[in-house]
Amino acid sequence: AEQKFDVVVVGSGGAGFSAAITAKNAGANVVIIEKMPTVGGNSLITGGQMNVPGNWVQKKMGIEDSIDQFVKDTLKGGDYLGDPEMVQILAEQSLPAAQWLRDYIKVDFYKDQLFQFGGHSVKRALIPKNHTGAEWISKFMAKADELQIPIHTRTTAKALIQDQSGRVIGVEAEKNGKTITYLAKDGVILATGGFGANVEMRTKYVPELDSRYGTTNARGIQGDGIKMAEKLHAKTHNMESIQTYPVCHVDSGVIALIGDSRFFGAMLVNKEGNRFVEELERRDVISRAILSQTNQQAYLLWGNEIEQIADVVSIHKDEFNELNRKGQMFKANSIEELADKFGIDKAQLMAQVERMNGFAKQGKDTQFNHRGKLQTIMQPPFYMLVAKPSVHHTMGGLVTNTKAQVLDVNDKIIPGLFAAGEVTGMTHGSNRLGGNAITDVTVFGRIAGKQAANN
Ligand code: ADP
Image (cartoon, rainbow, N blue to C red):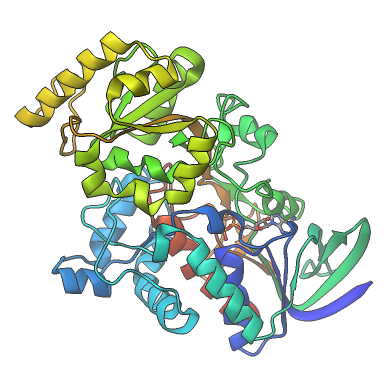
């Protein structure tokens, strides 16, 4: 079977939707193909916070910020391996992208709250309703529906098709064992995400990240777009930079959003009841430290003082219920009870909590030098979660230019081929700062859509 479009978008995460909707509005006949039965990819399961310097909530809260400061933070956070020109575009285009999400896509952002992730000098991340990517993916779906953009699910892109001149003219895909050829008059946009769920591919670049690590990624995130483009001699960059996330569900590997209590002073201990790392260390450092504890797991503990500020159990009610049902998180009126539930050394744990409370009162952690503001863990109810690290984000990927065109190993444009989102490797350097992925996929998804439609 053969189908003809102007623009073919591969992947239905934030980058794919941003690209497809923009291309459609620029007059192109667009299709999205998605290999999974449902849309959204990793973009559906993220917390969804989006960094935007100079955003409207900052103005309301009186927070000073600038494009320059965001660029500095992002480059520094990635050990200066990100591309300065692309990071500049990311910063400059973030506000128009966020306004487009708010006003046109109708994403509901909280009006008077912002998030500040590690590495950012000020609070600058907009928070979508319910703190999850489901808010923007569901709004994207509604808009795609309104614009009559077809979304072909269970359809896996297998290879890019080139004409004799080397121009990309379509995609060969497979659905239910049958081959479908999607011809793209103006261009193909790869928005297939990274390769965090592909153990073989990630250990090729970082042998340490074997199956001891789970992954926070959706199942479909296997590096397909990178592999398809590499067959056309596309260039990749920074593939060794793979980020782990320390606090994830021990069975499924998904990120424990409820574990955001850590940013508000929750304490990480091992089975012996002792702290073993600073709770706000870099993600990779905490991850390695957890894997060297008994059973390669850690326990996150907090009480009512922290919950009052962090509010994580009420925001993530469903997650609590799921974890509780599976025996991976409990709420109790005493810390001893929690220690019993998880088989943690009780005497040690109580001694450690008492020590931590002393640090909170003195405002100084002489054990691990916690950089945040500590709270005591004295008031019930208490909460404890068992966690382990997962592979989270692959910073490396395809090399693209400012028009989201994919470059080959000789730095020449591959005509007809565009890419945006985690499949690319331009902005995050060695380490993606929290809240920068949503900005990246929206900004460059929009650029890819516009460029492909006008190609
Ligand atoms: P981004 O954040 O960059 O938008 P996501 O992970 O949110 O990336 O989305 C990528 C989407 O691409 C996922 O829904 C994934 O299932 C889909 N995908 C990956 N490989 C293919 C492929 N070969 N064909 C079609 N869809 C794919």
